[in-house]
Length: 118
Length: 108
Image (tube, rainbow over all chains, first blue to last red; front, top):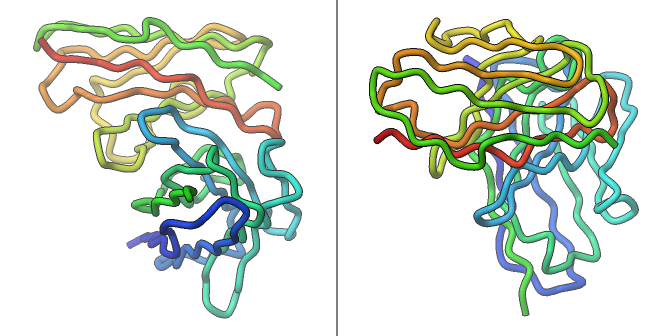
């Protein structure tokens, strides 16, 4: 059974850093396109980042230069390193597995809430 | 960046009736469009991909149509558990991957 379990969210001050983790089971992270998608409170879905099987990464303009997506193949885990956090980064962050090498997402984690506030 | 626009923002339909949700892309996305359902406090669930292919385990009352810039999600014979927010997403030109702003479906 495919499962994605995020962790690492919490309350952080503006300018701070946080690393989110997404532990996967039932499939191999490195063999799939993986993404982070976020949802601000009461708002819609916003794509954040993707990592390809090749290791190539892409980011939304809103997080480029501040966030880094990565994976640990030995732990079958996806990460999102978030630096220079801003109030507008406050959201539930979901990791998601892409289906069939196109970024349509067939499995999602339960989400982890990041709150950026002083 | 391809902008996805959904309409209406909110739709209220009686049980057993049909709901029709629309999604328009600012430029052609071919058939590279997905629909998701999100219930309160839950992660999104993939319903449709390739504009018209139901994902695994999705009931046949959910159907998608369209290509290019105009797409429709139809839910026939609405049930109470279909109350949710529905999002479309294009994956033809990325990055960025873009979502519509959502349609809230209420069951009367």
